[in-house]
Image 1: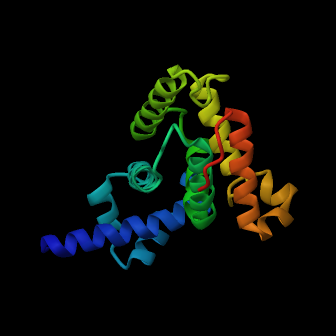
Image 2: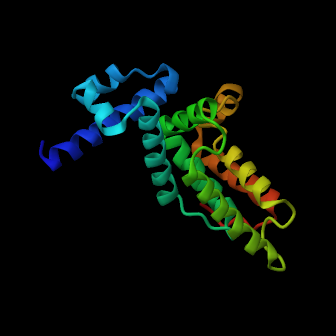
Length: 195
């Protein structure tokens, strides 16, 4: 098999697996459905990824890497960061469901990439808080980052709150984005600089 064909097949498998895992989680996902959607032999999945769990971990890491690459984190503009997370979470419902399944079905802290990204953000927030009037000095950085992410993703497809309790707010995403950024500005004491 040519290397180019192998890479194309792996890419199709990863795309099909993302859709399958987003819809059904690890336990409910079926390798035969992934293989059919990827237009390949089921045995290739095991050759390339060894197990369904390894395939899930690969899909999750690939998509988390994309999140961290695309969402610029700026500790001096936490309201803007919250607005960017909101936009991303609304545009990527499948990824938000994938992350929810990971939280439900995997051990906490099982993804090294997520831990490294979290540590880097917390360190940057600690450095910003050490400045005289740095944003977020009122709260522990870990708490503040979690609160910002929870607020910014509360109306995403995987949230049990926003879309179910207040579905009308999601009909005006621009206003919702502004309200989230303003709430983060209030919590952190940061000026609202916009998304």
